[in-house]
Length: 392
Image (cartoon, rainbow, N blue to C red):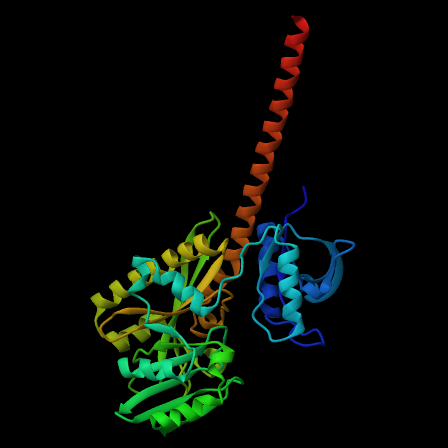
């Protein structure tokens, strides 16, 4: 019997065919081989629709080389595609629509605003959400600043800390503005009046580029750097949601976000919580509640949007120990754990989608067997009925 095949769906980063996360795919190929699962990597551009074949990227663990190989469509697809502003993303949308009947481990999640609205409908999760509004104009930002001393302005489809502004009310008419532009470059802090903020935000085209404004949580450490936590929840080899791990993140100097790609650093959760809360009992409570929150939200969002296999939750914890959900990421990286020195968690994060894929494959096979048996029994009953009629 041939091994099931998992196809990792990704996007080229440029027209020269550069692939993101190639090192991760190598590790997944090696781990998959040990588990009894073959792994291929492909993009929508590699699909020959008329012949129903894929010009796949295949890693050979023995030679440690990548090669191209024509393959059939895989048994399962693990969608790792992140938003791109390119024709390649249009190809992805078309692929997802054309082949939506295939066996995906994970379906696309919605944007930040839609996910926020979905979670706010459930009383279990509403209290964890910072106040958030969709931005129709600069007026929405000003109104939020009148209610909260600190707000963040974020693109609803942004990643990696791009295009995020932090605006802090320093006095009645003095606002401290800082952030990152859409190239992720740090914007130097500046003091503005409300009128000055209106003029400044005019260049950001907030209404046309689709932003939200969100209540800010004070998360600056004693050294002035912001911090938060990245919680990874994944399906396990039994098809159940589990918390894989949670690591702390500390932003770069002058950064308003903690993203590693923006110069942030990772830290073991316990160590960061110890310096922040300084209360062992409270720390234990926060860790248990965080884990439970993560698996609960994952299950709820899966109910709302279709099958998922993993999510990363960006969590803030204020100095009272209250947990805040900042955002949900459907295509999480794993580097935070390796940078925090948690190799066991990193390896688990690599293997879990593979273990879930194998479980899913076995479930599909069992379903097919039941249908075959039921079909056979139905034909036998039809034959028996025919024989009985003839005997009469």
